[in-house]
Length: 258
Image 1: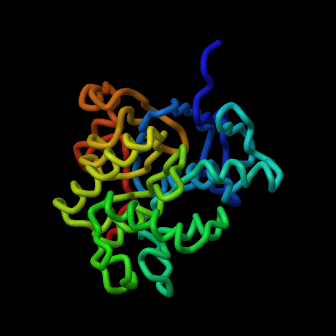
Image 2: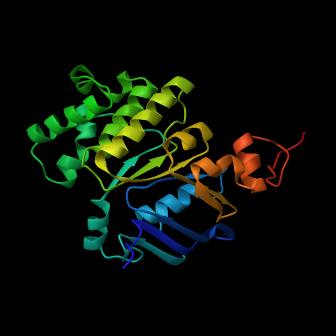
């Protein structure tokens, strides 16, 4: 019997009033696989991610985690799903009032009820994995650079040793060198955990580095899906336009003229 995908979406739709954001998403993410979703702003990437996380409920369709349907799950079952997840948010989303190590240990203390001393030791180890010292652990997020905040966010995402890690625009706001550092850390962290990764980004350099497979979303549907090595030879005009950043092509941007 074939092993079920770690994440599976079938016919997922989501609208907000008259605006159809997701129009029938079909996607499988295999166990231990790193899949990156690319696409322009407003194409449905973030809404799809929120539906998988259970933040939003799809209007129709199925979403399964480890072969178990998650749409409409009760609170106890939802908690079981959430314990499998780690998340690196676009803006790092650190708690300003907590020290760095407390941010990293948040899921251990609040989610697992771990003693603070034990959680702090784990947090320090995770911070070391992303190249941050014990001295940094005692600082507040406001005292960190953008790149350091991303590293702290990554340490928090891996602190509970999750089975699935979600990355939401992980390199946004970073210079090219720091973005590459974060990409390397993502690759090594996912590999060390043996985790499944699902990322959304419009940064093609990042997508190429962290993905085993890339899928492009446009108008609420997956219009291309293939190995990262085939990205430049996709044969899809939408993908070709997007990865080369060309204004001319089938993707039309709405521009207000004076």
